[in-house]
Structures are given as structure tokens and as C-alpha cells.
Image (cartoon, rainbow, N blue to C red):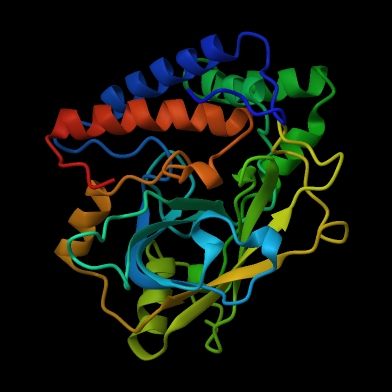
Length: 329
């Protein structure tokens, strides 16, 4: 695990809490899936794996010209849209929705030197993660898998954290299409050595999906397929610079956009395409997405990211080894 930055502090027993969560989630994967059919522990239901491009804005302000954003260039990328629930369930069930972006070699690189930059962006359709600390994350994992969700709710109420329950309920929605909604990183990342940022993805497509006549098991995938059959999709990729007092160690507290407005640094474009293929489905199972897949200038920080980094790495390796899948991270 990386050394803490001056912006970070660890919770008591953080390493033990992360180790406990990892063990619980690995046992759950073994129980829930037979060998050869192991799914991700987080966001296991894919709504589609899409091919896109990620273009850095020209003439960014000097303080933003760091790492990937140092100069204008375009990367090809893979984009995975997903449902948040840890179990496979119909799209019609209210849930949070996620999007993960994996940048590939920049188009300007030669075949001899063009290598993937090792940069993923993992976002959720919520500006906050209500389980914003390692201890809250641990309690949610333990009570939902090893004990009882009702006991977790009771613990939150008795400890004066009813707002966390309301926040979790607020995550549950039914959007018309994953290509029409905003996404946020919820957790912070470095920008250079001592500046922290959060990311946001804002839809800019001219085409928007209408509310479906019926919420079918695969209505979100259907909506994306219909959109991309005739139109491209696009998003503005933005950063939000941390201001004094904005928390690093609690992803459950929102950074005010009035105090620190979003600044566009790139454009994500998704061209017309057919993605409902066996090849794309297999690719989706081989790809690994993690906040830890980041250049040093954009390293994830904060307790929740430290937990995700450790848990994702262990469980991804377990899933790929158990099923004999080549990891394309």
C-alpha cells in the first residue's frame, strides 16, 4: 500500500478492517459462484462494454496540466457500464449505476513505444458514497453478508447515523439510460504531488432516451443499444479541485460545487456501435477496473480508496485464477 500523503490519515485498525472485508467477500464469491462462473464482487452485472475515445482539452490552465492532462492528446478506451448491486438482478430493480473507463495507448504513440498508460476512472451515479469511511464500509460488508442487514440498520440508528441509511436509499434509482446520467468519482485523487481532486462525468449527447414503456430485465442495455445504433454518445470529463476543509477521509460528505466548480479537462465520446456480442461479453469478464490503476500523478487517496485498492486487487486475482481467465488489466 502506498505511503500516506500529508492530506491523509488512517482510521484505527484500518489494515485489520480491510483484511476482514477481503476475507468475507472472497468467501462470498466461493459460495455464490461455481468454478468457471465466478463474477466480480462489486458491480457484477455488466450493462455493456463499449469502445470510446478520451480526448484531453487543449490550453488547460497551468495548474491542471499534470499527468494525463499535461497536453492535448486522444486515447482509445474501454467503457464498462454496470449495476451496483453485489448480486445479479434485473435492471428494473432500483439500484445505483456505475461506469468505468480504461484508457489505452494514446493514438499518437508508435507501435514500438505505445503502451497503455495504466489509468482507469471508476465512477458512480452519485456525488457521495454514504458508506464513506473504512469502518462504515466494513460494517456494511459484515452485516449484509455474515450477519443481518436489519442489525446494521439498528446499529446506524443507535449510533446516530440515520443519515447513512437515508443516503443508501437515495442511491437507488431507475434512469432511462446509462448514457444520459451524471457520474462522480465520490472519492478523491491526487493531481500532481499535493493537490486533490474529484472527477465528474456530465452527459452532453444530443440524443436522450425516453422513459421505457416497461422496466424489463435488460431495459438499460436495450436503451444503450438503441441509442448507439443511430447516435454517438458524449460526456464532459471534469475535475473538482479540493478547497480547505473538504474531507479526504470521508467520501460520504459532498464537496460543494459552488465553492469549487467543476472544470472540463477531457471529452469522452462513444461512437455508434454494436456491443451485444460474445467477444465484448468475454472482454468484459477479462478486463479489471480499479481506482488503483492510476498514474502516480493521479493516485487514489483516502481510506475508502485504500480499502478498494487492496480488496479489488486480491479478489480480481482470485477470480481470474479460479476460472483461468487472462487478466487484461
